[in-house]
Image (cartoon, rainbow, N blue to C red; front, side):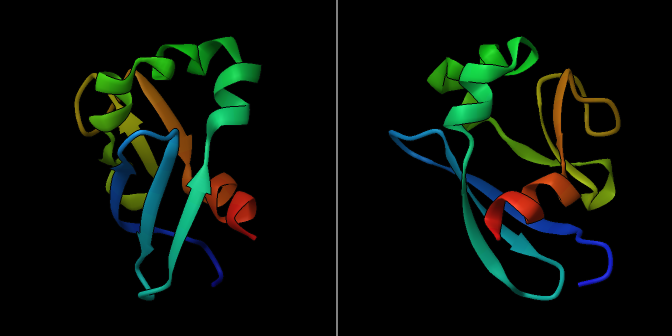
Length: 86
């Protein structure tokens, strides 16, 4: 995929993993527990209720939590997620 974009995302209950569907139909599960531990900006995602509220943001170029669709409070870029899935 030239530039990965996300069509759908869902949090997997009881984990810090997300299930992603890319615009080409490819599906991946990405574990975000390590970056959540490592980066202070992501630490609020250790709250299960916030993590579960993940959504597609920035027209598929990211996933996000909090804020609104165009400017989430916390976001994670699609290209970084694509690399983590590989």
